[in-house]
Image (cartoon, rainbow, N blue to C red; front, side):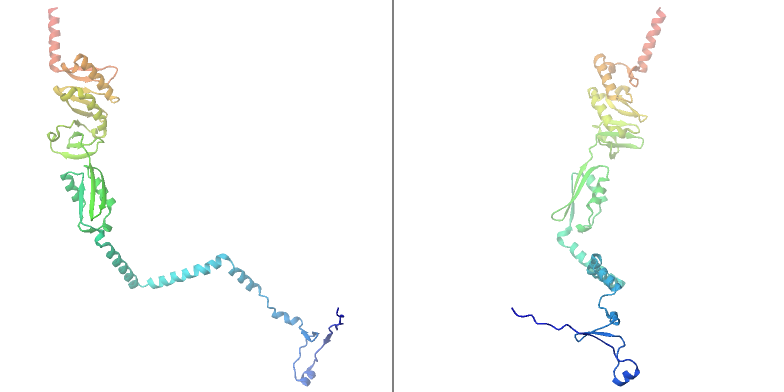
Length: 333
């Protein structure tokens, strides 16, 4: 092993610079008055050197920490470019002539695409409607063909067509080949409704189909009359179905006071039905008629409004004959 050599310990010398004006003048140099330490030839500065500390100040430290915040970093990375782009765009479109130029350019592109042949509609086809209804549809949907499919509002056209009284439902679509296809389901009239204002056809829901000039044009349909009868067509159909056994003797139904029905027969006969369960009351009258031929006699009215006490009203001639017969019997006695 090598022998350890003795090392000389550093000598710390404390020196003072000459002070006073004479010393400075004699040496020709400026010396600091602060005492200094020497460590093996290396100067150690005193307390005045602390003002040159390289550590950041408190404000600088806080700014650095603030810049390391994730939200601030994302804002600088994404928000600042977006803000710059928005600002540039706003500045560019602040001029009216530039805005108009851009709008015109976009409209030209849009028009050139919409007017392409594959988007043009050349005619309208209507299926499921009669001649008169087809003419009405073409009248309420005035389209100037050819027209771009981009300018057609199928929902609005469908709503316009279904707004017609004879139309129950409709579908509108554009077929290949530039054809506007309209499929219509017409309302089927089931009854004739006679009112003071005229005669109309109604479907099974009571919806208006069309107005007719004469009852003879639809003699095969049953007749109903009275205010509010259109709101009870389903009940009227049930009564007419129940009265099928009477055949051609049935003339129709009359709505009385918007509350109940009267079944009108030929020879001026009438069956007055109650407000509640009129079908059951009519069935009872028909059952009696089958057993006793009630409606074949001189009966003017069969009043079933009071279910507990049915009433029969005789015709005028039958009443006179009956009173005459009773008078003769009384005179003989």
